[in-house]
Image 1 (cartoon, rainbow, N blue to C red):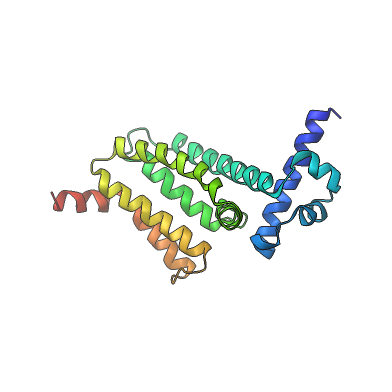
Image 2 (tube, rainbow, N blue to C red):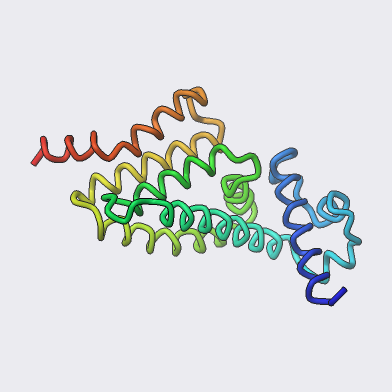
Length: 191
């Protein structure tokens, strides 16, 4: 097997092990030793890929960002090009997916925040472009930002265990945030 292929497999196995540890045991239990045990990779093999826990967290965030960016792009590709506020819908749908997926970016964010708050600048930088896209297509940019922020709040409150809503209630709220017709009517009534 080619070294590059073997190296990428080892890297992906380590990332999946890190996600499993965070989901099962919490971010405080994420160590290089735990990743080596979980993945079956020797500590030396793991250290060849990731010199530090911070390097694992950065790779974990990047992996999850890539996963959800693909989800968002696939959503946009399957959407009618004439749909108003397609980027907003894609972001709300992606946030809904993040909260419903067991090994989601939400866990990676919690781990990064707990261990290395500076890594969150990666997410902030990506969000700047997402927000620019949403504002550019919105008839009412402030209302669009409120809808995006509400969806983000549902995810974060769920991740931190602060969400007072059942899964069914949260799902209904996401559906309402996605219902462009009701928001269009709201915007027109308040002009």
